[in-house]
Length: 418
Image 1 (cartoon, one colour):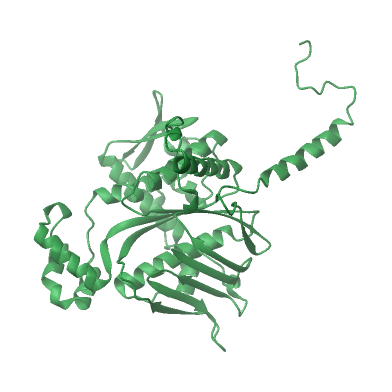
Image 2 (image 1 turned 135 degrees about the vertical axis):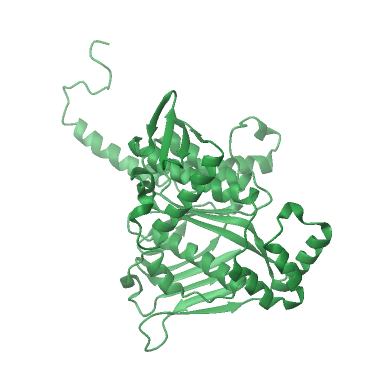
């Protein structure tokens, strides 16, 4: 389990939390939901680079460059970020007299091997990759949005070879094909084909999210990972006695590895302290509900959770920022189903289409006024605060006040004459 503490960064004052398999951040606009998601993403990336490549990545500069965070977010001299996992501690804070924060890395002793991670940040601005034709021609910088654009292109090229990708969610179903020779994105609903950029806003928002998620959560584990020359060189430096087996990494796929080679590789991983093959994916999604009908939101949430619940081999994680009650309550139902499975395994077969997740593996957070509080019951970990009902109640109170001004009107909602 990893922990993160954030002090005086942007709208956040003092926030401490543990990172579980599913992490959801709720709250009004500009309360720091995306700020936390970006920092978590950056921390996971910095940890990966430190452990697998020995690089001490500049945490502060990475947040500015890749995640487009403003320098004013760090204007408080007490600004600080501390990330601690079983393998390392990464801290970013100001030193006396310095104008920018400094990042310090400390490696921890751990007998458990670090599993190389695939880290995918899906930004709220994802629609543009589907709505603008030939968008790759207009990129001049590299940040989280452009990074997602590259991942979108790689994913759709992969599915071009597989012919098509199916989206099948409540109230939104269609097929997608990428014609690489023409650089055209085509969606098919029933018997009608249209260009993706002429599709609905929901289709343009949902497809890039689902396609890239499928690529990084599933497809990447069915293909051979190619080790870069820099990775090979780093491994050789750390384990020179096993240099001969290192050379095989760039030449031999997993299927061709004999038991003797696997034994040598296990010796190598133990010497390095990590496994270079991907062992898990960290998926971070901003506002998955964008442009989607409530039933589709619920279906999408269950689909994302299923990547974790159906894959027992890889310890994937999912982090979400959202304003949607439908996302929150759909997740709570998944947690409730997980609790039923734990307490009454015979009964869970009845709602067979319900996606299940252990509530203890989920963290639901509310951000407000620079602080964070848990939305979960201390005993069951299920959703404890029905705070959306407060907003509904305010709306109904206003409605009833207005209805009192129309005493002689038909206000029952029934058509006249019936």
